[in-house]
Image (cartoon, rainbow, N blue to C red; front, side):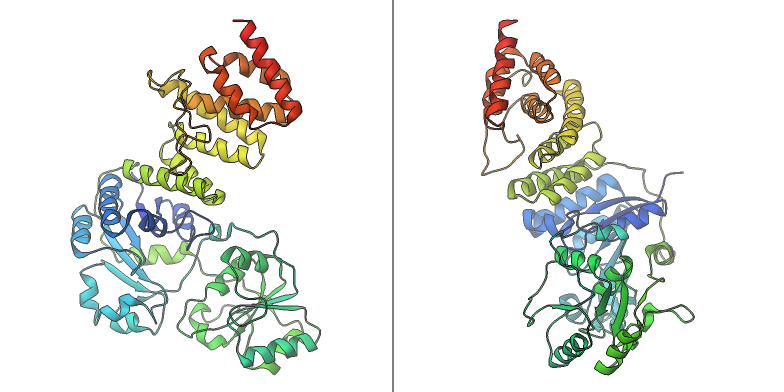
Length: 463
C-alpha cells in the first residue's frame, strides 16, 4: 500500500527559518515527506511565480497534505482551489498569531475555511484562536537543531531575551550569588544572537533560563533547550501550562527574582523529559482530515529544479551549509543525476574534505558516463560566469567531466596519493588535458604544481 505523503513548508538551510522542523518526525511515522522551501523560493521567484510553481509541484507529487505557515504561504483562493481539486488537503498553521497579518484580515473562521481544510494556531489566546483556529502546541523535530556555532562560549547559565529593568535585577542577583550567567538580546551589552549562535550557546550551557516575551507567544527557546537536554528555569510558568500536561514532570519556574535565585541556590533547575513531539500530535491532527485516494507519485521535476537553483545560488553566495542541504535534497529526488553530486564534490573540495571530494567525484563520474550528452563529451570549452550562477562549477566547463577530473586530481595530490593521481591524469582525454592542467595551476601549492605538471607531461608523451 503506498505511504501517505506530506509536502511541508520548512527550510533546508540549517541557518534558515524553521529548518527541518516537521518532515523528519513525520517521516518516522511512515509518511513520505518533502520540504517546500518557501522562505527561500519566494525571494527567488516572487509571489506569482511561486504560486504557479507550488501548484505545479503539487500536481506532480500529489501529496495527501500540504502544510503551510500563513501568512508566509502566499496562496490565493484560485491556487488553493487548484490544489484541492488535485485531492490534496491544505493545513494552515499560524505561528504566534498575536501580531499576525493573517489574523487581522480574518474576522472569523468561515473566511479562513476558504483557504485551508484545517486551520491551526500555535497561540492559545490570540486573534486566530478567537476566530476559530484550533490551538496547537508548537513542536519541532530534533533535526531542527542540527546546527552549531563552534565559537559560542560556555557558561553555567544563559538568558536570551530583550533587556528590561526586572531582568537586569535578575541577572545582577544571580551574578552576586556566584552564578556564571551570560545575557543576550536587544538592550544587553552582548547584543542579539543569530539562531546558529543561540543554539551553540544553549548547547554548551548547563542551564537555560527561558524568558517569556509574550504569554501567547510560541516558546521556541523552551523547545530548543528541552530538545538539547538542558536544565531549565522558566519565567512565568503558568503561561506555558498547556505544554506541561497534568501528571507529567515539568521544569521549575519562578515568578520573581528571589524565587529564581533560591532555585539556583538549591540546584533546582531540571531537564525537561516530556518535550512534545509530532509522534503523537501529527496523527491526532490528520485524523480529522478526509485523506482521499490520490495517485502514487514520488518525484517532482519542478521541485527538483527549484532545489537545484537554490543550491547553486547558495553556493554562489558562499552559504555552504545551505547549499549542501539543497544539493542533498535534490540528490534524494534525483538519485540518478550527476548534477547534485558534482555540486557536493565542489563544496567538499572547497572545505578541504578530500576523501569526501573523491567519493562524490566518483559517484558523479559514473552518472556522467551514463547520461552525458554526446555533443558535450570531451569538450574543453569553459563558460565561467561567476556573477550569474554556479551551475557549471568553478571552471565553467561545458563538459562536467573536466571539472571532476580537476577535483579528483587535486584531492589525490592533497592526500599524497600520487600513483592514483597519475592514473586519473591518464583518463583525461588529450583534448582536455591543457584545460585540466590550467585549472590545476590555480588549486595546488608550488610543490604540487610541479608534480601535476610532470604527470601531464608524461601522459602527453605516452599518447
